[in-house]
Length: 393
Ligand SMILES: *Cc1c(COP(=O)(O)O)cnc(C)c1O
Figure 1 (tube, rainbow, N blue to C red):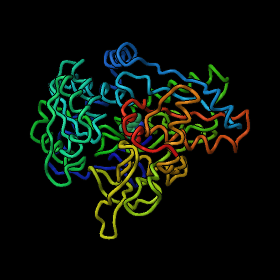
Figure 2: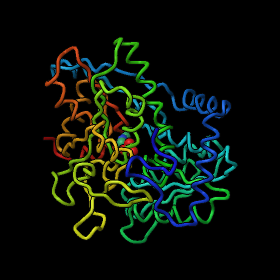
Figure 3: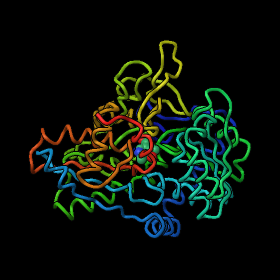
């Protein structure tokens, strides 16, 4: 079972944080392990996921897309239909409820494009907690709508005007707040990254995706899928759909990273393809770095995949070969975005369009009795303005 007692997935993971943060991390881990066995906690979370977030998310057979591509049948796990529009709510509800059971009254989050900030502000509102979201000043300017959303939900948005004024600086400020305030606050990390126990915690809360899929697929098809394909930014939607299938080697797991404009320095976010070992956000994993070991700039059409790190469990799954990692360029993702919109009437998030684009490449190489499940991590409403501004290729 991973992670081990010290929070490692093989060589990756751990806690690379200031000493002052260790008691807070220990407390979260201890409480979580206790609540995992607590029927009241488990049934309350299950009820929220069902009646509030709208789970289970449907498993949809994309017949027109499958027919057009020829080859394997393509299914979509519809995380785009969740409340707030993506898989992120699974994790924020789980962590917020955990925090409340721990007696915490306030949530702290860091956010880049604002999606995780909105999902955290939502969980805080429904559970009656205070919420402070740190966002880089540049990101806040670029993603004004999400700033308004968080404020409407009752959260305080702190715009961080230091350094590059993006996620990295917001993250530093959020950790600083957490160190000062952990007696009454919980920091909600938005992906399977950060110091132990976060990668485990987020994976477990997102595993509801894979658990549901297992049941739904057997019910529909009477067997297991051949491939599961998910996009990888930090890696939480992928880990959530992969995890319940790790012990079934006949199900192939594929993570899709952002190839951006191609694999030149600064032009992509393909951490598993091009990263080297390094520490980011308090854990040892693979990391895009320049020749001096500085965190490298990244690029992706989709804000959610535009991230130089990746969760330690993905680095481990790559090393053991249990999962395969590929990358998709901006223009391929854009093509898949239009394809799904026009063939199935579903506008996907640009992140999810990366997973979809890979499935579109894979399907024609497989037989009609084989199947691919794509984790449709989110809906594209947030991306329509951006896509409308790009000339269709
Ligand atoms: C945030 C986000 C992602 C990337 O995050 P992961 O932790 O890699 O899942 C992917 N898709 C959508 C829709 C997102 O909002």
